[in-house]
Length: 153
Image (cartoon, rainbow, N blue to C red; front, top):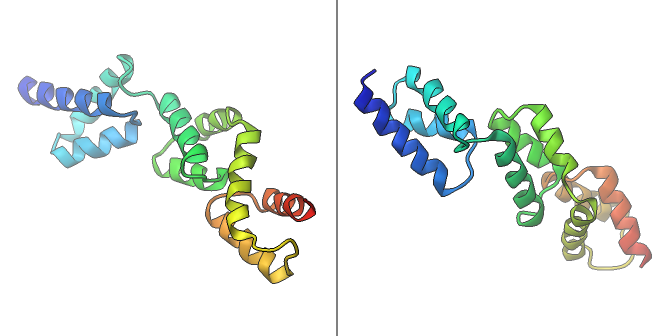
């Protein structure tokens, strides 16, 4: 591994991380894409972590916040997406504890109101709505609870 190549990939990775919050998996994928040798990956990621360019906890907190507030995703989908990026469960769970339950339910209510057209729903309509919300990552029991709240208002 030449010092010149290492410095080139390190500088590229630092620029990549400075643009937007990244996790170790994203950086490793980029390094492979750029053609960096495998033995450089860990050294570069260790340097980036030590110098706060990469932090899986910080990344996960930002990801969870954006997914709930902007994408209107539920915990199930968020967890699946983070697991695809090799984020450990303990980090995901810690970030989930940061979710404001009121905001989470507000996001779900917003989605449900676009789906619910009348005050009374048949069981088939409810199942379709629950299936739709489940595909967005919401827990079925919370969806049923929120449907009941909307129907009772």
